[in-house]
Length: 147
Image (cartoon, rainbow, N blue to C red):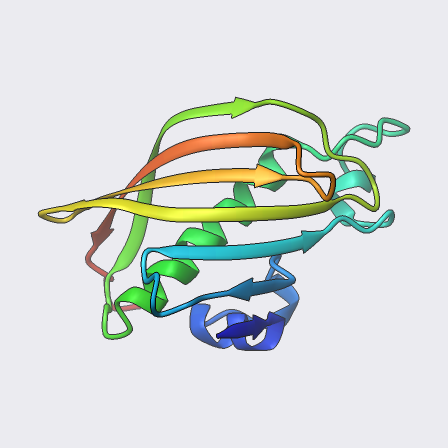
């Protein structure tokens, strides 16, 4: 199943304006895996608002993409979940830098699901196949309070 920004926004209950993922691919035969694609446009707000004249994609922007990717995988795995998935980062390793016009190819894999805690492993490669980021995140749902 290939998902575009509009479909991702609908699943995440977000306006398309706030979706930071360009595309996602989910195969129900491999239900614990999600592939995410993000093209880093030269005029991306995270390049412009980071450090003037220093065109390296910032780690906080990578974290936003990873967060939405994990939330998307949780939505696909548990479509009836009404709680809010929250995470705790175990480790992050930045192995390379991302520049304007780079392509982020992200693999999010759910490894464990014990009680109410799941473990996610994330790897990001650029368009040349170089690993530029890896992390482990533990997640658990918390009860959604009425607004």
